[in-house]
Image (cartoon, rainbow, N blue to C red):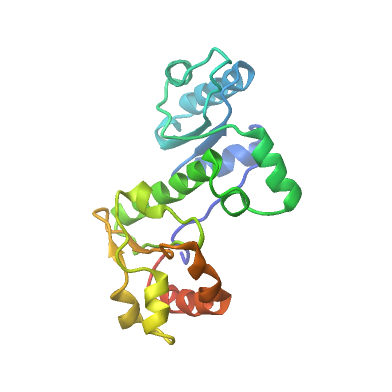
Length: 220
């Protein structure tokens, strides 16, 4: 009655509690890999949900991008599951392990990797879908050195966070709006600086100010 969305992270398997939770959900998100063993188990899960009339809730499936040498392509995955794969994430064990060991997000520790690009694309797609559903959504690109949100949205940044803070040291909602880009989905974007040397100038305190202002207006 109070929150727009409730996200539930279930335990593994189809226990009585999990089935009760899934019955209450409006959308079920499956995260799976492309090896045959995992696909077989995912297929069994889909068949169970179909028998319980929950198949219509399978709106999105996120799959790990099949490796070139494992003999299973994305068309094979979709044929086996009988469900379209909407979004994929590359497999890069070396990069992922290094980031986990450093305790840093992939998009910061390995900003130029394909894995980081996939996660950014995932975030952008999610934001655009929320905007299409008439939610007020804004992307704040805080990858201040290598931000490339514009690439995924097909937009060329004109005004950025750097220009905003150079001209408005104490921004308001009205001054912020002048620096936001508008996407056809209804999404708003505040782009990161065009050049990495501006990263140190912006600073965490300035970003805190911006988020505090935007939080009062946008849903996401």
